[in-house]
Image (tube, rainbow, N blue to C red; front, top):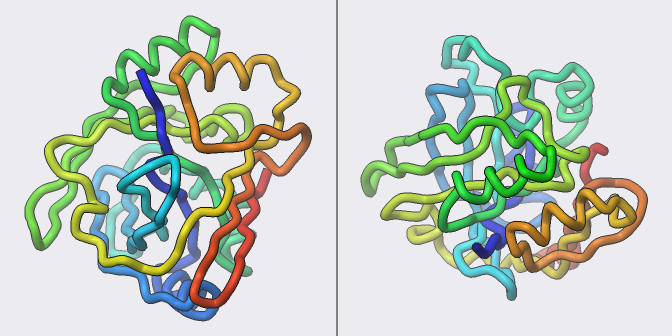
Length: 223
């Protein structure tokens, strides 16, 4: 079992806000994404070069105003009032997602440590190049484990969204996880052989440093 960065999740009040932020701060226009009908969200995507992970990308995600309420808590805390208030000011780094070969096996490894990543859910969305299918862990309450330092786990089907993304000129310099003094966090990351990050004590739970056409950009999580 080997977990690697799949994508960074940037929450936005709207995709229009997210695109404007991306162009102004990263110097790149994100590519079209799609809609997640079962979550009532939609996204835009940007290729992300990462030394420890091929096929990494950055996801700009927002509640889809054209979608009906999903009847469940949306992922990444998008329904939380404090998250919505923060995103109204500007897009923010909300979470990271780690790619594994067997998401059920990885989730079971965390359950044995007393952690509940939530059930493994099957999802899909249409793209101009065909259907994307994946399976991932999603808690029913939408909560993130250990303040978001522990990633959501994902397993892709035959295709990956980064396969069709153009080179963006944006690269991940470092991904720092807060709470490095927590033995639970260390054991959980070791259980899925997660790599490509640094552990430090304290908060925030996430900090990503990017090299971009606009220079170095540091993104911090809300934790």
